[in-house]
Image 1 (tube, helix red, strand yellow):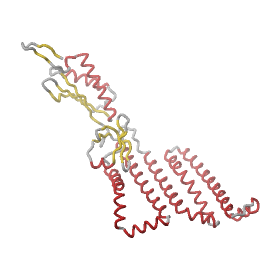
Image 2 (cartoon, one colour):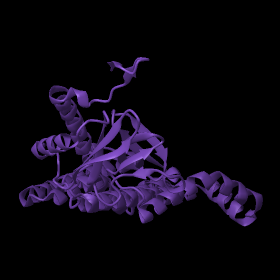
Image 3 (spheres, helix red, strand yellow):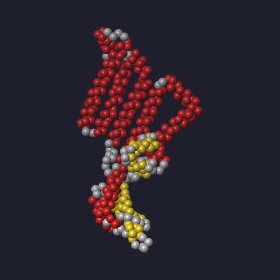
Image 4 (cartoon, helix red, strand yellow):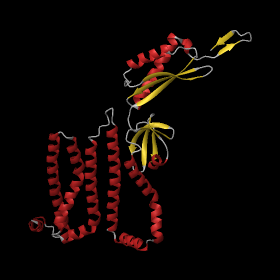
Length: 361
């Protein structure tokens, strides 16, 4: 077939130069390869749409671009065997192109696999601990594997350069001070990478966990190999090194379950009756849809000379719901006390020298 193309070039078009011949044949082969790729993936897209599976759509979309360039490279390799000039050019760039294409294909398959597996981990359900653990492991595995693939790919590409390969062999042969210097320079990166692997294995935190760290309350939004993104309640983002979660104490409110207990404290007059407040608290919390029905307790937890501390204990399905529930109960109970028994609020009493009550406030 290549002979026919050569005859066509020489007879009809008039390109007699070897360079023009190689360029034209390469362009024709590239067009044919792209057309074949378009037809194949158009059919695959129709099949994935017909199946109604999100996993099929993810695989097709992830593999579309890298396979396009891989087919181009394969077509040029086949043609280069018949054209010495094209083969010579290919041999010079193959050391860069082939590792890059292989690494790209591996990453595409890896990301498609991870995204497909993540579909089964639905974190929108109430009891989502297992789903959050699964997503965390997938995210950590994805980033560590991506780092390793890119590291190996770049290393193979650099080794195709004779000068870089000679330097590498010299370092390996000398080992001594140069090796120590390289090891010292790479220590922070390796330490962070090892911390990321340890984080994935021990699971001190998971995606969407509620934590308190550095005095800030928020959710684990993203876990990377070197740092963790904590979404603060006011939409700020706290960037925390991965090693901090392994070496320093912090609070994880949803380590085993998303369900939490919360409190509202009332500071009342020592003479205030608690039973009416207990009944009103039970009425309000039973009417509140944010309460999960597990815990409702009214207790006097502390007394002083001037006040009585009453704790209202309640439960909710997760941290944001608990915060809103506490706000509802705090507002409702204080409004009820101010309307029905305002004398129950704590106050200071003043008595004059004769022993008569002078004022209270």
